[in-house]
Length: 170
Figure 1 (tube, rainbow, N blue to C red):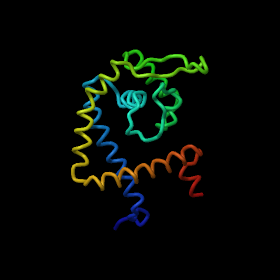
Figure 2 (figure 1 turned 90 degrees about the horizontal axis):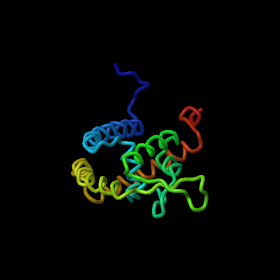
Figure 3 (figure 1 turned 135 degrees about the horizontal axis):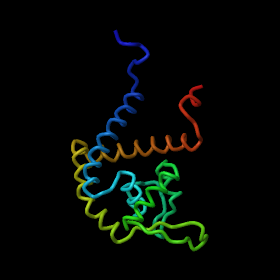
Figure 4 (figure 1 turned 90 degrees about the vertical axis):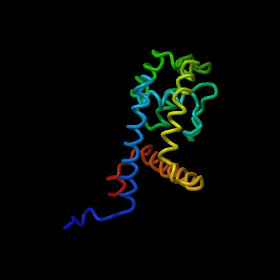
């Protein structure tokens, strides 16, 4: 007999499916990135610095971006971003320059080598995404994106307030 504590709830099933999907996508991407000598965090930061429009969070990139902006946009810690940025600079994929407004701050920019790396990975990235979403119509894909963006904004808002599920519930 099933435990009644674990009865079906659409909210729980959605969260579990998102976690499973994230793990599957991460596994697919890890194989692709290993061939390029990148980790998933490095790839994410590199795409952010390059201004990948698919992030849809409004992080600025035309004149460069600060590592703190990437950390905030991706919901990652500054030390984690700092280590990733250092490694991308070492690999020659991004550069760091003084901010003209405040020399203590450093603007990150993608290098030509970084852009070339992203160009080489793009067909593989698109192939993975196309395969995963093949059964959805364009309208379903757009609706799914809209819903995911809405949920992500809500989750980021909760995280920004320092709330945890226990604090919310109790």
